[in-house]
Length: 455
Image (cartoon, rainbow, N blue to C red; front, side):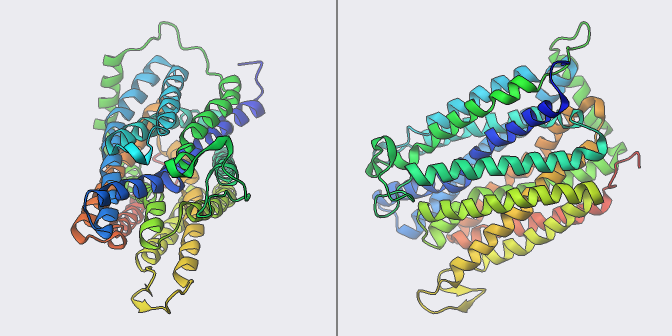
């Protein structure tokens, strides 16, 4: 490790956020997610289902698919984290899940409308999502090694902001040279590059290969500059020992009430936020009748807001600590969730608007800016908060538990949205469970000590 300076090591760590963010920005929220919703709905309508029912069913299918992926992540994350801590090796796991990320993302190319398979679309997307989430667990565990404890909030915020910028650049490339609008031209006024035919959805499906290549190229600085110390003598992968250590940690959680409360709190508010990211594009497409191009432009604005406020949140974290940042962001996100539920093309909070009014669209843009701002800051502050709560010698395991706590309701949130959408047959009412999840997360922060049990 001596030949890599700390500055290079930090920048290498930043590049994971830059490389991986497009899966959230392009695949989950603004391009492939809406494409799945639109294409699945068209397939259902071709089978005789009404438009409103088909759109609601497509949202529900997306939710059930994410539920399955979330369950797998939740069950395996703490186990793999504990095994990695026992062995002293994280990098091989990052290589493994990076490969899964690339294969899953690339596979989403094979989802043409003409022979669209809901099952295969969700399998490919789920593979990439699982790869991204697990790679994140192991890279986040390096955060405590990136500098002095008092600087970790700023480093985390800068990394998250850098990642958002990567998402913005990737999304801009997608919209400028590939994604066609209603007139068959991209935002730059040209036909999609590489001869991609909008009639086959190729201009949108190319988001899969683009995301895969982006990750493969920009992970190079990470693998070059983030070196891990040699494992201790005699260390090797011991699944049994890792499981015993994990069970010991879980049994001991009641003796660490601040960590337990924080895992519970973040379980609710992070997963409500993921629900917003997951269903935002599908919501805009189905409720406000936006095009994928409009959703993409909305995504650029939200991601820019996220980049700016992740950096600002990092500075606030360094000055005040992560707790105030998390509380303020939770309050903003509760307000935003209420705003989204209150919007429809015909009314705002039940008050009718003039036919053709742009007010609902404008307010949804405001909601997007707020989600980006609060989402970037709260995620950055959250991973720094864990470094204050957890055992420094079991950090990968801690981030595995952190992923477990997040996925415990990441699969619950899509399921609640899917069930609520099915019951109400209404996309707008389908997202109401997110409000309750944010509120639960905020209330549970009462029992969290800002600097952990040692404070």
